[in-house]
Length: 268
Image 1: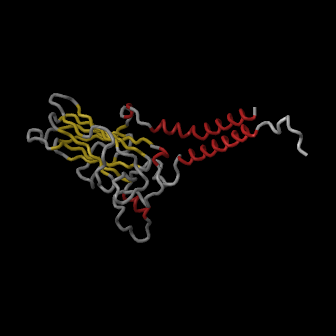
Image 2: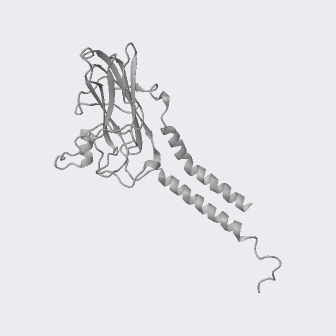
Image 3: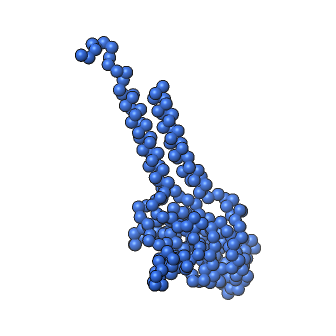
């Protein structure tokens, strides 16, 4: 009975500790219906990195343009998130559209999966593009091209359009979603400040770097930028410690036996 109670109590503690982690992982997984519940966002797009229009994750940005225009949006991505950018182009029959995503250092980020370039077939309706980035890391080596916390830029354009396609009106929309990767993507380290516009500029006298970032970039995660030290990996570590302790006590009681064998004389 004692062993049974120990095992049951260990399982209960593990369930209490790991329960929130499992729920968080389930909530962070992307779903096909994410775009259906997206709310309306900005109704225009920028024409360069400097004029990119901010769009919040979960809100759909739209813009009317012409084939041959360069359309730019920006969004914020924090450590532990895996952003997915989807775009839809209506019109521009016969044009090849391409979706590119750049990080705060304006480095083009590769897509883990998704069709980032697609040609609109003649007579078809909409052209849908998608790009899922790698998980954003809290810190990386200077030579690495890993995505880091900060501003990300979305560029949508028609690649090498023909003269007949130039100026053809199109309707575009873009949607950004961010799934939480959890503690499995955590690293030991963090950036001093996120990579946002103007982060390399000298702040005015008497102001801090955090103040400068807040003034230059208003778009940030709803719960603020991650501190870089807390992840749900701590919960997994604590649960592992509890299970190890329970296993140690169970093994001790199992190998200890019931006491001194009956065929031996009592100890003096």
